[in-house]
Amino acid sequence: MTPSIIETSRRFWPGLLLALLAACVQPPPGGDVSRAGRYAPPGAPPDTCWSTHTSPAVVETITSQVLAQPAQTNSSGQVIRPAIFRTETRQQIVQPRQKRWIEIPCPAMMTPGFIRSIQRALAVRGVYRGPVHGQMDAATRKAVQRYQAPLGLDSGTLTLTSARKLGLVAVAG
Image 1 (cartoon, rainbow, N blue to C red):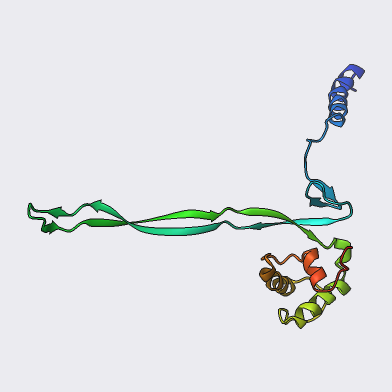
Image 2: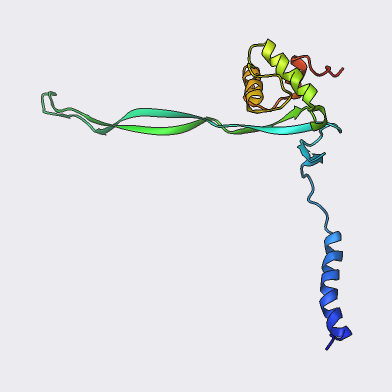
């Protein structure tokens, strides 16, 4: 027996209504701006590519001696029992974890030829000792990290600023 038109429409209408209502939903305001599958900070220029770098928190361990029991003295002031101290250790965040946006070369720019140029530029500066093969492998990323760490970014993701300093990208002017 085939289902009646009423039974079919009971199954059909809720799905259609849900699809129509979903089309009316607005995205939340102030969300990340997406460019070619990447995210960008608010106000980023069009046709730019971005990544985030999170630096870990700097934690300091503080060890101190705390008086647990004071010294006991007699009436003449002579120490009968010396003071007892205990060691306390606590950790304190000196600098909180920081997330910052870094502008990076767009994926279309990261061709094997461009990566070979990166590898050659890093080799000349003594931070890359691997083969020049045009692949962004672990050794190349480690060399990028060694190059960028003294510049204030301990990351294996090449920034556009570093690419400019290496002479690989024209300086915007």
